[in-house]
Amino acid sequence: MNAATDVAPHDPLAGQPIVEVERDGVSYTLLGTAHVSRASVEAAEALIATRTFDAVAVELCEGRYNAMNNPAALAQLDLFRVIRENKIGLVTANLALSAYQRRLAEQLGVEPGAEMRASMVAAEARGLPVWRIDRDVGKTLHRTYAAVGFWRKLTLMSGLAASLIVDDKVEEDEIEKLKEGDMLESAFHEFAKRDDVIYNALIDERDRYMAAALRQHASPGQRVLAVVGAGHLQGLAKYLTQAQTDPAGTRSELETLPPPKHWGKWLGALFIAIVLGGFAYGFAQGADIGTDLVVTWILATGLLGALGCTVAGGHPLSILTAFAVSPLTPLHPALGSGTLSALVEAWVRRPTVADFERLRDDATSLRGWWKNRVTRTLLNFFLTSVGTAIGVWLAGWGMLTRLF
Image (cartoon, rainbow, N blue to C red; front, side, top):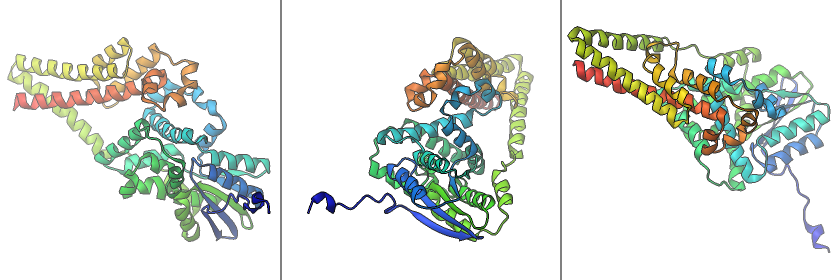
């Protein structure tokens, strides 16, 4: 007997996490995937090719779907608008997450989200509608950030930073272990697993949201394939089976951004009152004391704000702007030294078309963040802001020790 005939044909669905759910007359097939996995790509393609479905749902929001269909979307980014509308944090987080995912993908020769793309292509080839059922990633990150306290906010930022700078090689069998998690969760490393609040916003809320989206889209008698990260598989199946709330109401609730905390405004107003009161009290003790406090404040905040801008590779005019505005912006809640410095940087060193075209690639390395004019402007915002904040604390401490 020919040895070749003894080899069993490859079954792309063997061992793949698949869950079947029936709800309200709709038959759901849930495929759990790793977002960077050849096996997941093959499984998605095989399911669509061998079974009959009326629709295919993917773990993508509208923004990520459009970005996947239009790789040149970043070239259309309005950097000035991003800065003015205070969306730098969201853009930076998206770039860091994309860099982490892409770094993993490059080690395996699989494009980020390849199983989602394969599902979309296979569905469209058969004339099937493609439902985008995930919550907007910006709202997910916003709700996650708003749900935690100061130290856990640092945890989130540390996780994003680690996803950017850690460049360890990951073997393909370890990548397959991502079937136990979610790409967003993985980007924050172990933090989400150790923190119930972060896990709830990153994973559980999205399980509820996607289950509600599926229920809202589907009609009785339909057969629907949902391709999601395997970290969502059990939660999605649970909420599809058990949730009794109105799906439209659930989605609306989970899309609502929490209102800003009033105590933050009060603390800001109290801080300004203390600083201005400190200056007034200093001048009441003597013109030399008051002048010394003002000069210390200007030098501490201005020099450290300028230093942050310098570390970010800012243009001399951006550095000068950081020095000039850093003493003033802490006393005006509507202004930010990082915002003004970044605006000047973007104006003086306007990003070129080539900068936008290289943005995804440059965001995968530290050197690239300083080389690309877009990411360097983002760094300008953050490092100038950090420098100013350190200067505020040092100047404030100096004021207290001088007066008391």
